[in-house]
Image: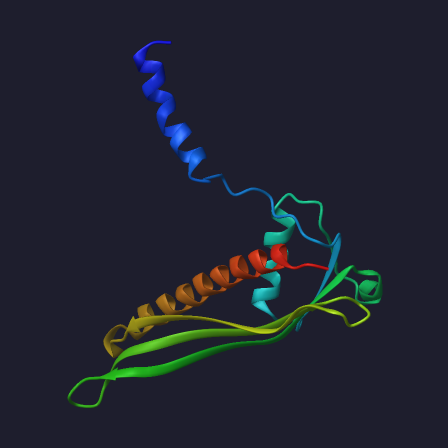
Length: 165
């Protein structure tokens, strides 16, 4: 083997030695899942899309009549957007806001055995505010909420994959 080949394989050996591996399809301890959430829940919709697009063998049940046949039920107990003023200028005008997205959920079997107890997840972002460009700040706020929802869905996916029967 020449030196060039050896040098090109060195990073691969180092990455595998440190435990690095590409993220793969999540494996769940259950084969079917029912998501019990309000009909207008944006987070539930994004979670459904993410689970369907993950390429795993998990079957998502949508019909409420099929809930008793699911291996696991994800109850989305709360999804709340909050907006708080955290900074004012000398004349009392708002200059900085904090946006929060808070969810509460639990994972259980149809018989009521908890796989993940009642858990709260919180995402928050700070945003500057200027009333002269309020429309642009409103669009930025919507984008930040969407990003927080995506982050929460990724956290939920990891927790669902770590759940044990």
